[in-house]
Amino acid sequence: MKPNSTNRHDANRIAFVERNNYYYGKQFTVRDLEQEQLYLNQKRQLINRRILGWGVVCGLDVSWDRQKSVFIVQPGMALDCHGQEIVVTGIQEIPVDTSEQYPDPCRRPTRNSLEGGRFALFIEYEECKTEQVKFPAQGCDKQERSEFNRIREGFRFRIRSWEE
Image 1: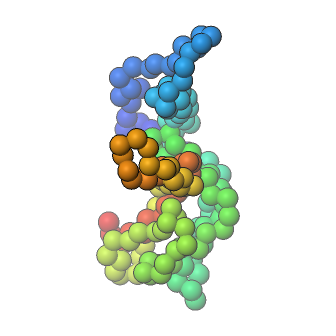
Image 2: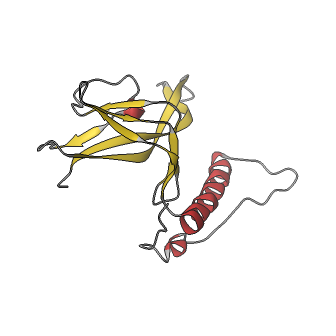
């Protein structure tokens, strides 16, 4: 783990810390519930950044399979420079040729001009909305609409040439 020395004053990036005040009869709105999650996430991420730093916490060993031309990443956990947790629960195979289609759009690697045969593999925190729910048309609005019921915390791999 590396201490995050580049952002010594990142605690000041949060304009103010505000949490819900609960009382009997309070009516919750989407805004209240989103604020609750934001408050808890910001506090946890601040602790992760300032106390733990960023980098690999455990696992995430990387190997190269020459026959398949894929990186193989073992399960593990890392913290990114924003304090977000990245958890890889299963073995991941990341092909250098990223033209292959992936069944999960949240786990699609990207690449930038890979030339020369030396690569760097990065893992990034990523959120993906899931469980689309459709709502019937209401009132004057004659169109159905849809929202996503969940946000999946995940990751994405980025492959870059060594020179980058």
